[in-house]
Length: 269
Ligand SMILES: NC(=O)CCC(=O)C(=O)O
Image 1 (cartoon, rainbow, N blue to C red):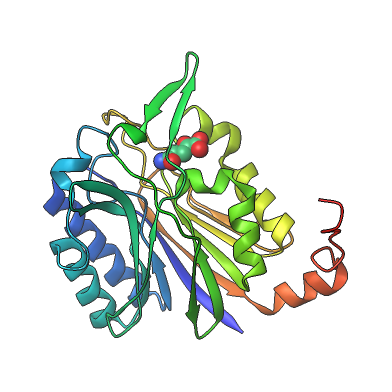
Image 2: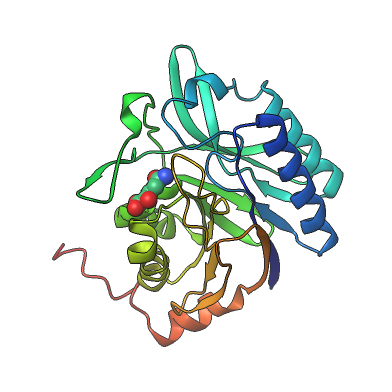
């Protein structure tokens, strides 16, 4: 069974309307390229900056971004993993991904569960938890191609989350993300390949394009990795759409050749 996915690496600027217009253009192009499913990056309507999240936050599902994405999913007949946006819920803000079916209906939401609080000496310091609250669920949703998981950026560093999704039946794990120029070159591809290899799933990562003027410079390099741990395709840092065909029969092939998921010793660990 083949699934054509489109990973939309769009430039994210300060102007929210411009970001939404870019998303609309890329989704139109993704549909024209024959994609069944499209994925946007983390915080695609907002600069990735803790000082911006509250100003750009919207209520889900009634906010303008969610409404637009629902329209675009319906107009183009796409399954759509709507990257993530800052979600306002009462006084709290979450980093939330909304997932739509081709009728424009919401079929799942995921709130980033692991907040990006790091301090790499001479590299990068970022503290999402100053303004964001964490979600509390592992998110797996049904598609005509089987179960898919969604996690947001830093979530990928916690192997137990992807393992739980694989145990819950996910065959593809989608990661709207925005790595940076310190950890991106060091860990981006390694993390996607590791999660794919350990769980024998497809891993898809979508980043914003790199904007050297931004306070947080995204690494880019949106990519797709197969269950054998191979990178199927990867963008560079520039805006672009990565259209990739996933052959989902590969999952069974890999799991039959290397039955590691069945050979786990839960009695030991
Ligand atoms: N937006 C994020 O969660 C960034 C994660 C990241 O860059 C990492 O190294 O992890």
